[in-house]
Each structure stands twice: as C-alpha cells, then as structure tokens.
Length: 345
Image: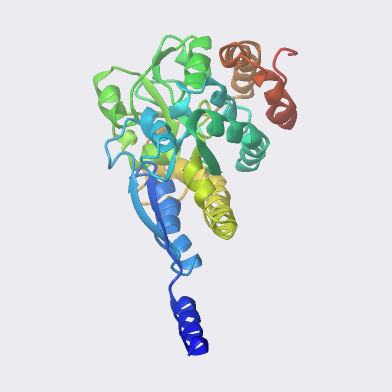
C-alpha cells in the first residue's frame, strides 16, 4: 500500500504544472516604431512562446500609464513593476554619469553606435544596479537624433541664436556651446511649441518625428546626429531578477538579445535612410506618404566644428558633473572605441 501511495504521489507531482512567472512590463513610447515593431511583439508574443508558457507578460507603456519619463526607472527600482524600458537620457537627473552612454556625434552609423553602446555596457550595468536597483537586459537604439527646424537654416552655424529643444542634457549643453538656447520641452509638446514659436528647432529621431507629425510644423531637416542615438535601456527590477531561477534568467537574457536587441539594431541604419526619405521626399518612403521638408546638407566643416566643441567643452563639462572615476572609465571603454579621450584633446 505504501508503494502504491508513493507512486500516486510521484505521479501527481510529475503532472503538476510548473509555476508560471508573471512579468509586468512597461514599454517606451507606444506610438513609435521601436515599441510597435520590436518591444510589443517581443514581450507579448516571442518571450511567452519561447518559455513554453512559463512566462506570462502584462504589457503597457509609460505614456499609456501617464508616467513622467523621469519616474520610469525610479518606480522600477521600487518594484512597482518588473521590467521597464525608456530613453536613458530621461534618467540622467538621478544619474548624471549615465550621460556618457549616448554622446552626440561620436557614432555616425549604426555599427559605430552599437560598438559605442557595447563598450559602455559594463558602466551602464553598474549605474542601474546602484541607482535604480535593476539589472540591464538590453540597450536598443532609436534612429540618430536629428534636427527639425521651423526656420530657414543652411547649416550648423544657423542654429546660433535659435531656441532648440534638446533630446537630453548633454545635447542641451552641446547646443548651448554652439550658441543656441537649449529649451526643455517634452516630446509630446514639441509640435505645439514649433507651431507657436516657443522653439525654433527640435531634436529627435527622424522616424519619431515622422510618426509624430513634426513635418507638419517644421520646414528644414538637418540630418546631423546632434542627439546621439537616444539609447533605450530595458531593465528588470533587481529583486525580481534575483528571484528567478538560473534557467529562466538564461532564457530571458538569450531571447532579449537575439529576438529584440539584435533586430532593433539591424534595422537602425536603414531606418535613418528611409525616414529621411519619408520626411523630405528624397527617395522612396516605405512607411507611407513622403513629405516635403527641405533637406539641409551637412558639410565637413560642420562636422569638424561640432566635434571640436564636443571634445573641448561638452565632454569635460560632463566629466565634472559625473564626478568620481567616470571619466577614466569612459576613456578606457567608450573613448577607446571611438578614439576620443576626455582631458587629453
């Protein structure tokens, strides 16, 4: 009888389903291509399917929750939700050292931007551990952050004296060094600000500007990556991460790298070309109707001047704000990758 009871108990244990992991996930801007094409399919479909039903995901976005963008990672660290993703620059008020992830003009192609991000990744992981009680799962790009102007410009020099909405703090410092006035306007308020003249120009990704209709309230497009690549960090609450078994951690890490991060990077360079075509009509627009913005050619002199301002003014200013040994760490990682060293140029 004991043998029969043991056999029944063992059979019941084997038949019992493995407890599922429930993940509450907060994505980035719901209206933009990164979320629509990569975040939403990955978290809603790809990861649950790859887990064989072990992982259940409840997905929303920070704008659908009406969260302040600066609160996204703070609340993640507090355990309000399990996973969050948004632009790293939104968190620099809490972590000025994080500005070193996405520096303007150091990467002009997706491959260069990926190399820069990979070099910065250990620093970013340490920042998220310490500042936001979280573990970094992925760093994906928006396309390069270019300049939309509702003013006639012919090059970088023409930004002097204009009011420009920056995409992050380092970009704002960079614009000020060029003689522009950096203005703090949220992404959703930019069209109204351009229309009313509150700002003359604004920086965002070309695709983001196309999707959000910035072409309706701006006339000139300067395709120089003054705002870097607007890296979007995906992170998981550290307590939640540590509560997962090693197999689940490995599954999430592998899937997020191969099925989310890698495809997002693979499309980044073509996205810029396509988005410029969509905004200006110079080429074929795969996303819909092409618009008629004036494409402003970027000269070698523009690039040279901008890089000089970056190295001589903007990066040293950041090193002072970040403090500690962040400049040395940046020089040894990102700087070594892109051929720039703070304090020696």
